[in-house]
Amino acid sequence: MSEKKNDTEITSFLLVRHGESEANAGAYFGSQSDAPLSEKGRRQVVALTQALREVAVDAIYSSDLSRARDTVEPLARERGLPLVTTPRLRERDMGALTGLSFEEAKARYPELWRELVARMPYAAPPGGESHVALAQRVSSILDELLEKHRGQTILIGSHGVAINHMLRHLMGIRDPHLPLWFSVDNASISRVDLHRRHNVEAPRLTYTNRVAPPDGTPMSF
Image 1 (cartoon, helix red, strand yellow):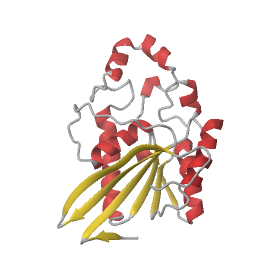
Image 2 (tube, one colour):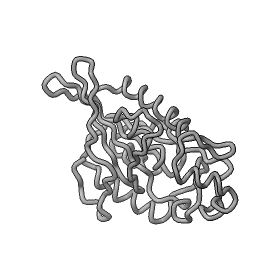
Image 3 (cartoon, helix red, strand yellow):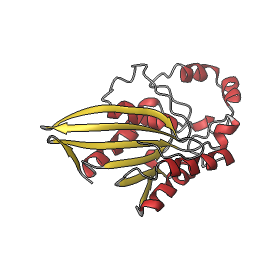
Image 4 (cartoon, helix red, strand yellow):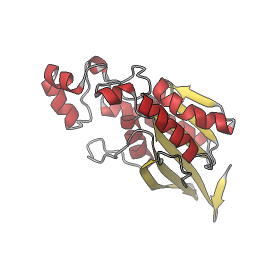
């Protein structure tokens, strides 16, 4: 549904992080492995689905990893919308660190660990992605979705680090060295509204990291 106010076209992105996964619960790098939702994560999905039941959405996309797909699939099913999955919305590929606990990674790769903690933009695990590479990957699909769904509300199921880079891109932050990071908890929703008028796109960060009440009380998003 196209939304216009005073000749301003609004395209909204709702970015949903997956519920708690077994990797989150076990404090290890899930990366692009298919770590499933934990029992807590499944409960979070139920609460999230109930809380969003009155929110209008035009299109739903997701990472093809099951923890993200299973988080937003109920939202798509309730609305009768197709769920489009793609590896381009996956979490950062942590390469050789995938499956390692944080403590194991710190012990085996102390220099790399220091670079990761410092969020150095070009540092990458062996066989994995840097922040810059991840940003390029998710930014390209966001640009495509914006052109395809102008004036609509797009819901995206993805992952914590990936959503950080989506938020940065949608807000027009292009400097990879700028140390601006967002809290993105499991089963949280972040929203950016892009206001377009006279071919000028003005982003508004409406909210970040909004978590649905455990009882599923409907929320205004």
